[in-house]
Each structure stands twice: as structure tokens, then as C-alpha cells.
Length: 313
Ligand SMILES: [Zn+2]
Image (cartoon, rainbow, N blue to C red; front, side, top):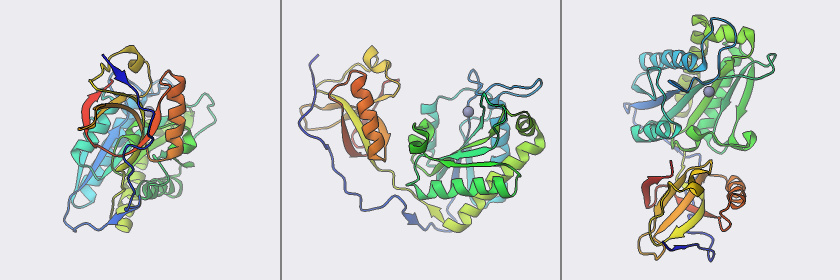
């Protein structure tokens, strides 16, 4: 099969964003607000292990907190619908979580996790977002950390985005609605582990997130973030579809997506990543060049444009 690579132009589709990333849109009062809650891990993926005897693995703590949070939201905030990535102890892949959230048409995404560190002295909460450019995610994240600190007696370790972390969190990167990933505390800290395992502790955490979410809704209407204009790294173009099961794709730690560009000779384009920040896209491009895709380059495109359903894993 003939595979041609493009070197001769840089931007596939140059989209000038007329809508900034912090677009606010007022929504009719009776519109249902959908919240997608993701209790991290599950099934054969236990997440962080319990440390003290009798304590539970992360997947169980996440599920307990998520259930409480979902119940508070659906019972106490009018016109809300809660959707869960899982309600039992089962494994859902990161791809499936992001896809389910996107398909559900959720307005907000909240992922629940617990932390761990070799240093037992470390404790406290942290809320992750994809980018500080996203106003709604940022607002919600700060509201959550603020509740933890002022009402739930937690030590807040603040809000962090992918630039500060130096890596992406897949469920925040591939979901299209404002979203947060909450690290509810450190299981490696004996006091915090006991707290996270207690009914009272789980209640404190879930109520804090619930109150933050309610305050956020009251103060910001429904906030929509424009996540349509994205950067990706193109690693290959071809006249015919390429087998994504090949080792050179499978060995990458990023999934490869297939895009179709009708009317072009090189109909099939293979792309990696999903960034809103050009600097991060550049970082990914250099990484992919090192990993053997020497002609990798950045493209800017509208999300979903001509995308086929084929993904490398
Ligand atoms: Zn986790």
C-alpha cells in the first residue's frame, strides 16, 4: 500500500475563532442540566491501593463519593439529570468514559478520584482541569477547592491544568463540556485514608462538591466552552486506509485517529492528540518525531470534521 506523507503545507484548515473559549450562553430556566459523574477506576482496575488494614481500594471510595454526589445533585438541584460512567464495580475504559460523556450531551463532567504518594505526610485535595483557558471548568474547580478548604476542613492543594501537570488527563482532554477531576484526598496519609473510608468523610467530600456545583450554577448560568477549534498532530497521510493495528501505531502511548478529507488525493489523514494550546501540540509533535514519525506536523482543525470512527485502540 502506498503511503504518502505531506510536508508541503502546515495548516489544513485554519480556523479563526470568532467565539472565545469563555462564551457564556443563557439557557431557558426549565432546561434540564445534565451532569456526567465518573467514579474513577473499577473492576479489574482498582486505582490506588488501600494502605491501612480494613480500608478500601480507590475504586470503592470513588464510587461511594460519586453516588452521594449524584444523589445530592439530583435531589437538591432542580432540573438536573445525573448520568454515571458506572454504578457498579466494573471497569470502563478512558475512551469509553469520554465517549459516553460526549454522547450523553452532558453539560458538565465531574470525575472522582483519590490520591496517593510515597510520602505519607502529604495530604489534601486537588482539582484538575484541562486548561486555565476554560473559564467554566476553572470556575467550578476553584469553587470546589474553596468549599473543601472553608467548609469541609480539608487542606486545599489548589487547581492544576495540563500545562502545570506536564501531561493530559484523557477524560478531561477528550470530553467536550466543562469538566473537573477531583482528587478527594491522599489514601497514603493515615488520617486522610480513614477520613475517606468513613461515611462521614465521604459525606463531607460529596457535600462540598455538591455545594460548589450549586453555587457555580447559581452564579454563572450555564456556561459553554468552545472546544471546537483544536490542534492535532498529523503523522501520516494516505490514499488508502491504513491498518491502525500495526505495531508502529500500537506502540504509541497516544491513540491515532483517522480523518477523511473528501476530494483530496490523500483522503486519509492520521492524527494524534487533541490540544487547545499550541505549545502542548508542539511538545507532542516533537515527541512523535522522536518516536519515528519524522514528518509529524501540527494541524489546526474544527473538531469532528470528516472524522471516521476508526481509532488505533
Ligand atoms: Zn484514580
